Length: 248
Image (cartoon, rainbow, N blue to C red):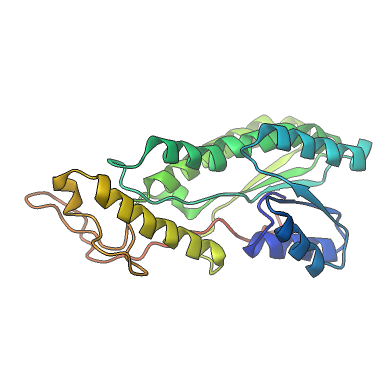
């Protein structure tokens, strides 16, 4: 499981370990790993894993292979993810690229590394997507477009891996009240401030004008003068990358 440090990812790792599964939990910080281990009574092996680091992903796969051997892997849960909210006109390309590195390319890297183990056990891949892969909101394109891409990749994998009886599952959660919501809101407020500093005059006038909680991109949408904007005066858009994998 990737993204097991906090929120639903952590809760799921603990629940599965306590239910008798040997869980290999991917975390990025040693402190998060220690906190996770303290919560579980079951068999839980920590993997220090950043999905954007191909070397770390390969080392994690080697560790799991040494432990599981010919038995293979019952399941892979892709839970890692981040959320950025920016106007597309002014988002720095390096930030957009990082969004895709984590939410798309990192997922593919992990899947490719663990597929040999999944084939041995005819296991399954569970990818945590987002309801955002079904819609696009103002300022939400960096996040939702990455989820659209991930959904397409997951659909292709479902067809490609069918001959090996490997089931591929996409979960599309909406808003879930975990720490991930606060992270996205904080990034939205910071992004709004940076966008106002970098935007051209005509754009700046239609960006959120404060950094109070709830004042990030996507919170205040004003119809441009003389243009057609959405018939929404105020909409709250919260996103999370955590959910509980269901039984399928």
